[in-house]
Image (cartoon, rainbow over all chains, first blue to last red; front, top):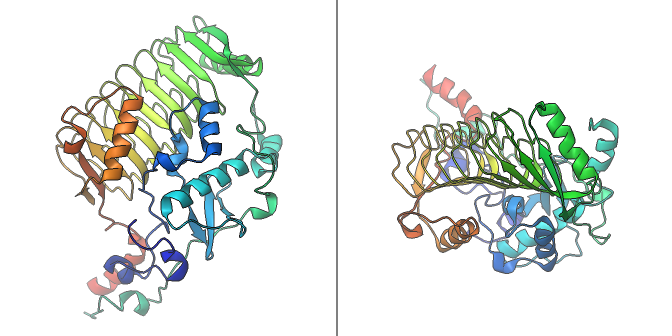
Length: 127
Length: 281
């Protein structure tokens, strides 16, 4: 995305003629088609890739930093909800680095023993 | 017939900006807590511990249960033989594993997986990798129709050719086809990436909502709302890296690949319906 990375935090996001016509921001509030720049991968993500025996980010290629109620956040498909990026984390000035932070945070959340999926599995897992 | 100006159309209908909202989960989680690298409930496996599974005389349920038992015993590598093109094999594997399959799979092989790396020496039937969440699947020969249906993440690779409706309803991940793909590839695709090194059949990307399709050969025809776009440097870098990963090459070079994306004219069509009715009536 070539526009300002804070665009969706500071405007209503109605940019294209199409969006103005239908009165809605179109879909996601970030560029879902932005492919990752592996040169910006964090040490934790590299460690995860090595553990999984993957040479690239695999499913994390689809993870981007989005915005939930004007807060930076990342969407967790396993709970169908947003995980808010803590205020203590300073947002970089480019989408690629923001996406890497989102990937790392989501991964830590999903692998945590406090993730809701742990309790859901205990209650509903069949095998 | 009433006239509605384009700029005020949505406001006249009472529509307004809709923001994506959902329930945040920050109360469950502290970003500073210890960082695991696998799911908390995943079995601890060692890739150097190898298990073998001969499927001769077994039914699919027994085979899938046996795979889980081997993982629970700590096997991080499983060599599976004689799958006999049975349907629904190797499904629902939700943690890391190296799974080597000698032979071919039937319908819905390796569906619903989340993490394993799978190598299949033969062919696969319909809907291989359906609803795949993460991991890699490499198929050495051809695949049937609806290859990677509703895939959400990971890499699904077929060195040969695949049938029609490849990546139907794709929601993420990467599908790579070394040969040709049939009609309606990328039908209702919503997200993710598809790399077709050979030719693509008619109605490529029909009704796609988002995502990207790269084609190295000829395209018989584009579907509704699928439009060409320009390759950028990041695309080229990513394509090279991804193809190198699986030892594959674009027959005419990456620079000559075609990029197809959504025209986004079908988005939020339900909200336009009232205005269209108004104009018609």
